[in-house]
Length: 166
Image (tube, rainbow, N blue to C red; front, side, top):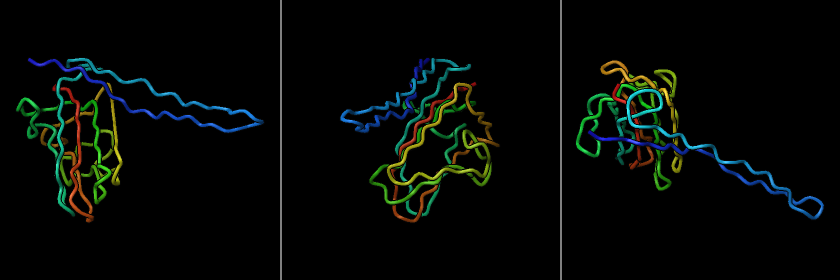
């Protein structure tokens, strides 16, 4: 049996400085708090961790099956019931944009909220989504996360998924 402890960091920190009357006025935007997920399957917990660097040729796509096809670091097939966090990164060196979401069938809606909604990640972009409650994965009818590559060239993208099996 494995034990999973997760921390999701998705924050913006900024310092804005302006010189006024011979002094600097500083406006600080603080970091947001980390989101911690404990080990288990209920609210605020997860027991599945999946991470991969995947390659898509130009003008191709793939459907990531969140319930029964992907394997974790221990060689176990993941079978997510609730996705708690997703991170998708299109590296700076990428030659093309990625479109995430809108599988032709059995779409995992997750944070996108609908079967036809997508997000586009240009080279250097990263998206991080987190839900302590989790987004429902329904095997066979709502478990496919589509990732599509544009026409610019091959892309090696990074994906991380934290989920619960129940």
